[in-house]
Image 1: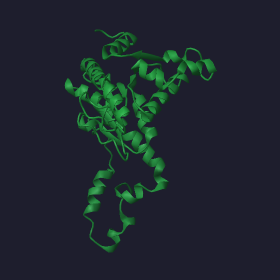
Image 2: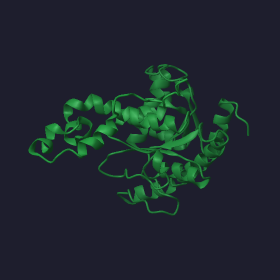
Image 3: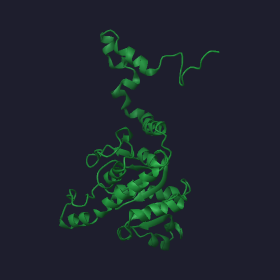
Length: 281
């Protein structure tokens, strides 16, 4: 019996093989021309505006393929402000004294995010890091705390970074081979929720609210299964938004507020997830 060929075998050359062959072509005016380059090896071509649909697809596929290869089936998402400092750290984003005081006071959420990520990661170890893997936006502040908490217990964690003019260099605690970079906010947000078994939201600004409200909308409209959505800091969020007012005005349904749980500590948040999925201690 003829032995089975390796998965993905084809009698035709793969693109990576032809790419190497193309580099050994004779050096002539024709081979130096931009038109001669293989399309996927031509940065100027791949970044043309007409190829936006292709780039959207590639941004969806690359992280999806890598996470699947790692066997990661589910995640716990941490959203939160890039500007929150570590306790005792400098409030680098403060524009005035009041902001400095408030950012430093809210730095306790850095610690809670770090503790929460540790709890998730300790449970994830029971699944060989296939379930409940911590994922953050990959930047500083709360995001750093989440990746750092996983790193504290030797667990892998994911960072979904995005190209921005400021704030968004990858933090050093992300597992390097699980650190991704995005151009499109929409595709990045898809990756946040595609595997999410829980979403934890810490104090933050416009970006945090954008991610949080997209999650709420998906659950409210039935486009996403119900998962725990946990807000850290009830006093912060009740001032930042008034969902009861929206229900009174009829712009959301009574009970839509029940999609959310409020907590102040990592232990409370993990308890909600544990009870929701009937997990062991």
